[in-house]
Image (tube, rainbow, N blue to C red):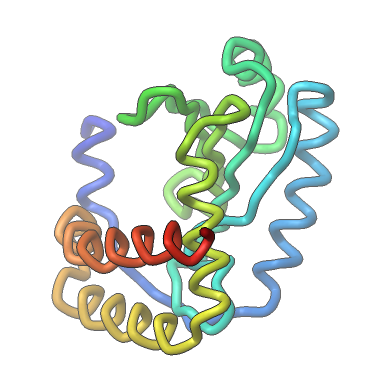
Length: 178
C-alpha cells in the first residue's frame, strides 16, 4: 500500500474552466459544517482557485475555517467523518488541521485555523486581490494550464511551478490591503 506522500504524487492534474456552481457548493458545505462544528466555528472562507471568478481550477472546493479551538476540532474530527471528511492532522502546516472529502476524487479540502492565524488572511487576501484584478486571473490561469500540461502526473512540480506567481500575488495583495 502506498504511503500518503506517495499517493499524493500519483495524482493527475486536471483543470476545469471556472464554474459558477463552485460558489454554491461552498455555501452548501458551510451549512453542513455549521451543523457539525457548532460554536467552535467562527467563520468559513472560500479560498483557492475555485473562489476566483474566471480562474481555471482543479474542481476541489477549498475552505478555510476560523475556529475557536484546534483541540476542539481534533475532538470533532469523528463527527466530520459522517459527511465524508477524513482528518489528516496538520499535514505539514503548523497551527492547521487539514481534512479532505471525496477519497481519491477529492471534492473538498478543509483548512482549520484558530482565530488570528496569519494563513487565514493570506488565503483570503489572495482570493480578494485576484477577484479585483482580472488581468492577474488570466495570467494565473494561463500559467496553471501550461503547468498542468507539462506536469500532468507530477503534482509536486505543478505546485512548485505556481509558487513564484503565488508569492508575487500574496505580496501585492498585502500592499493592496493597506
